[in-house]
Amino acid sequence: MNRPVLRPCGLVISQGSKSRPGAPASTLHCPQSSPLVNYRLYTPADFGPLYAIEEACFQPPLRFGRRYMRQLLDSPDAATWIAEQDGLMAGFAIVEWTPDMEGTTAYIETLEVAQGWRGQGVGGELLRRTEGSAQGAGAEWIGLHVDAENAGAIRLYESGGYRLEGRQENYYARGRAALIYSKRLVSG
Image 1 (cartoon, rainbow, N blue to C red):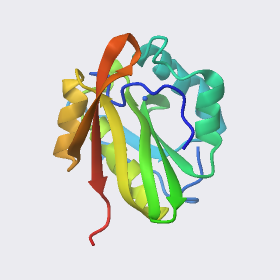
Image 2 (spheres, rainbow, N blue to C red; image 1 turned 30 degrees about the vertical axis):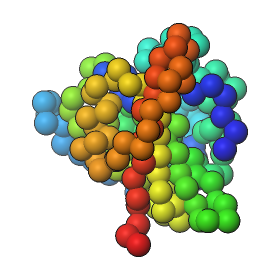
Image 3 (tube, rainbow, N blue to C red; image 1 turned 90 degrees about the horizontal axis):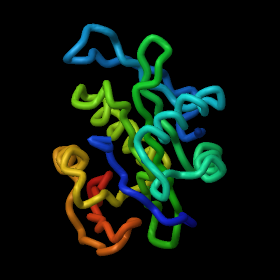
């Protein structure tokens, strides 16, 4: 996968595709409020609200540019899941996969939850959805980088079965370290 300088993948406690055509939207009851959260795949009409969350969650130089974001969203080897309630976007997640000689691997490009929705299960459900899309594309492994200081995102990934594989110093701007996590999606 050809990526620019990456940034913390996480909930930022806080970074269209076509992986599962016809996949039904579904709902999840939000534990701290009564409204239902709907989960569905990205459509081009979602770009404005999606990018507004990107701008709220990440400042330059960690923010994905509009052009790169559109490339991710339009990739046939990616899926973008949207979480929304009453037409307002609560968060989104993007996963890409790459087939190679050893099989298909997936990478979570970003998982972002709007400030008012954090701590309500939205991130966990988006994570499960990205895993399902990656598995549906044949991926056996999924990985991600997360800012070593993003404790909330680290808790989410570890509780979801992700294992710490390493640490990369100076991975992000301003000398910030990244933790590298992965998870096996299929049993061997």
